[in-house]
Length: 279
Image 1: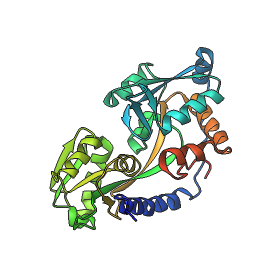
Image 2: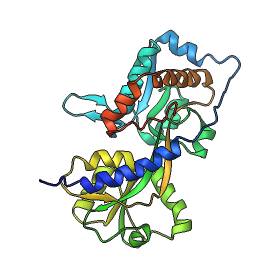
Image 3: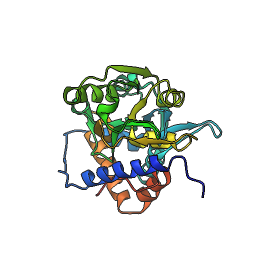
């Protein structure tokens, strides 16, 4: 029987995914926020549309389908269903990621919903929902690579993306793991994986869920090191003062979690139910 070239990668993915599920199932404190004279939800209900700032290059969360010229992905489908339940129209607006804060502040978009990573710094700037998915920053190597731990790879040439969160996570990890001495920065994960295929780098550091989607389209055989650089949570970001709108979105997501929609959508895009809403 012919062996799936990415069989090892899938096993590694399942191992780390199991760790994420165990972490995700811990009880979480419920944040109840209110603000006097908050009309953020009323404004959305009156205009009957929600302008959602997204990226078009972040599969499987949000990506432009070049054949249909439409946006697709996990975040896209969940947002569409949420807006349907709120009886409003979703308007997906592709934004420059480094301009997301100013676009939200200036009212060009109503929220940021595209695998947005929680951080203490972002919590100071935005009104954030509770996490809806957990992931991890991991290291991917070729299956036949001689590297099995972070220390094995630390002084080798590694590929990273221009993502600020990934670079910050790597910098924080260096305080306990030691300095990664030879980093090569790529514009996106696709370019980093291409470099790995050509042996231009020895490994790629990226988000577990997103890299899994990219690897499955490749012919080569890869695996994930069992050690994660960091764990991350995805949230939806609103203007700091838009508490009512944020609360309404959270409430609708919780109602959706009581049906099989999130489970089915998660299995469609990730192969397993990784939604942590209501879990």
